[in-house]
Image: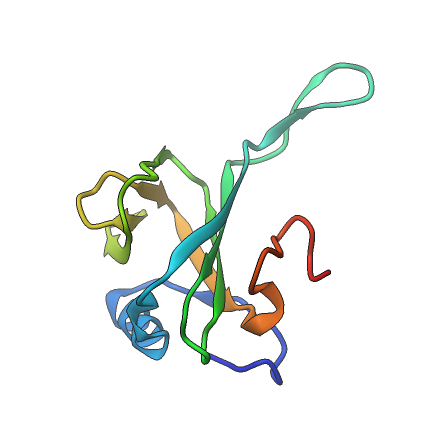
Length: 139
């Protein structure tokens, strides 16, 4: 992962070895919280009130940690086919790689997960620590 002096760049998470390397560099997201989650369904209504199908669902996830090397990590999960959320469970992050999909587990008991075709992440540094969100940007 990088620090605040480096530019943000997306890192593809496409295999177990890559996930393990990234997770280790973030102390396995220890004491992490899901600060924000945003869903784009891939469709919208245009100015003529017509339904436009513009792509597959995407989930953005902002995780804040107590790790100075990676205090805020943004995940983008593309081509989402399943999402389950249970805010009562403490976050534990893991991935399971299938033939054509990736399961991002957000809790140990499987109560929270996102299943998609692609997962990328980037270290947002300290820009997104505190009450700042992806929607508001740094204030």
